[in-house]
Length: 89
Image 1: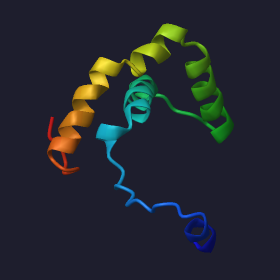
Image 2: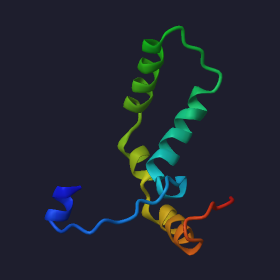
Image 3: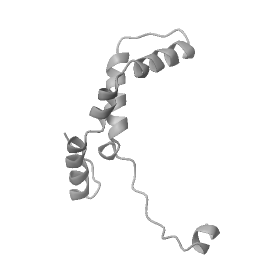
Image 4: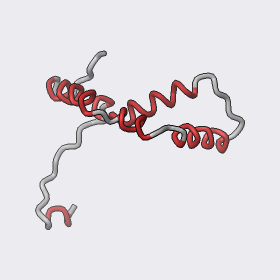
């Protein structure tokens, strides 16, 4: 903290985690969760291999779709509008 004050950085409050503001997590892990439905793994290594193969098998378009600006801009605006409160779908 002393270094932060010495460098005269302004400390900002860190908002709590909100899935409304975490588009990559929301998009990519929701898709992965659906893919994992019904899967059973006999070891951690088997699960890790599955997840690595899942993401390696996706093309660039998949990753771009997850970051599509228009889709998330509305969520960000909504979160600001409700001042960070939970947004019901």
